[in-house]
Length: 312
Image (cartoon, rainbow, N blue to C red; front, side, top):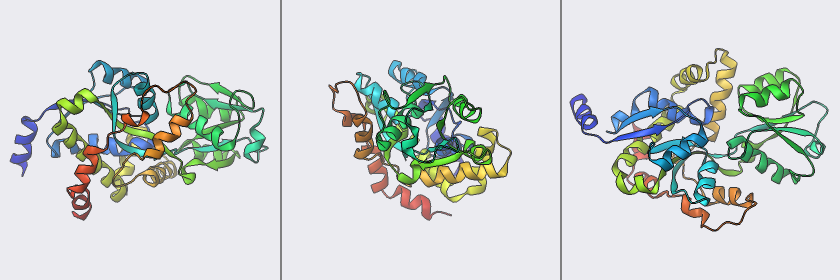
């Protein structure tokens, strides 16, 4: 088996893979990288760490062949003419919780308040738009979105009182709870369809390297399996990648990740519709063209996922 695997890898095509690996939603990708799961399926992966908007540009230029990035970012780029394709999800719901100052007890109390945000095109920005749409609040007239340059500043803005509310994820939710802040809404429980974290490639790579992408997806599916079935391994990866030493924080991050995962992470049509509803500019391209689940569907129909979970 070892000789066969080595022969596969030596003769395999190489994919340049963009991936930040620093969030809970990307746990399956982190496990795949750390435990060399792509090697098992015969594809060489050269890993590049970068931010989401940078990865979309790199996909467009051809310097990356595949990336784990926000599906909303991919859709936005697609509608602007970039030929990206979402070939799988990792997380197809909004995984944040809305936390606020203790005197804010319900969503309508957010009127006139400051809510932490990040720049357009980021996943938190998309999540804020979905939140306000769900709450029936006008983002231009009824609340003030305060943009911070990076995600790490969002929680600190809430903890120090700079803003009145913010969308948080573990481990920041633990500090919010300990600080006496109030959790107003768990968007993950609401399970609003959204291409939050997606596996993204381009039309050109799909046409040129379908076999390599097929093998890559198998590695990601194996990573999901490890996340769902091997909590000790997954928590060690979380601890290393997110630099967490508090067992409570690691546990909360882990539980949040697996609650959002599915064995076959197909991006549903409703997830694309959620983002399209938020668009304020005319859509001159069929938005559903960004999603291509053909490869993932075929892998599943072949029985790969069933066999993966049957194996000990």
